[in-house]
Image (cartoon, rainbow, N blue to C red; front, side, top):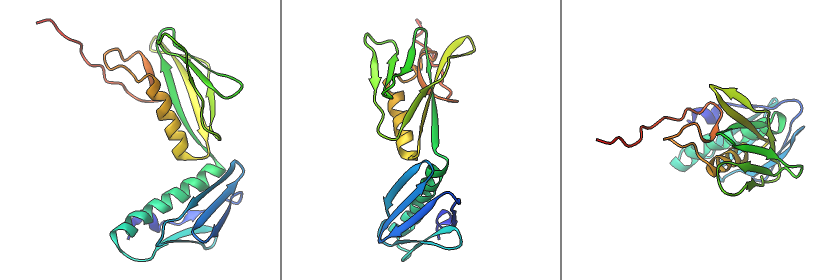
Length: 188
């Protein structure tokens, strides 16, 4: 049995869950999400909790059992609380700002300004700069109800200017990420 798949998903009072055929729809104060449940996986509501079961013990069904439970649990958490990721823009002269149309503009050492338009349902916020270890860090907060989309947007923004391993004081990194400093070439 899948250990994760066996755990019931508690439903908060502000969340409404509907199952129709193989479709699950979750609505809450922050929005609504829907997902198609794979064949052989059955979801049911019992006593303010969602239980996930599988039809048989084939390898494919075992793999999908825990996955389905995790995705539905993330949907319930997303519509009730939401998800957030935080990035930090680090570098001398680097700037970040969000326009009224929710478009992120970045000046990160290129000859041009880079713009990033997030998908629908994602909110970007640039917080005031912080000074950490003598370096200016500009925090960017990415928030939304879909955990996968929030993570993908964070990865896409980080991809614009990854932290340089030879000069770790430059680039866009996740909050709390430690960039390993590599030693440059040594004349021998």
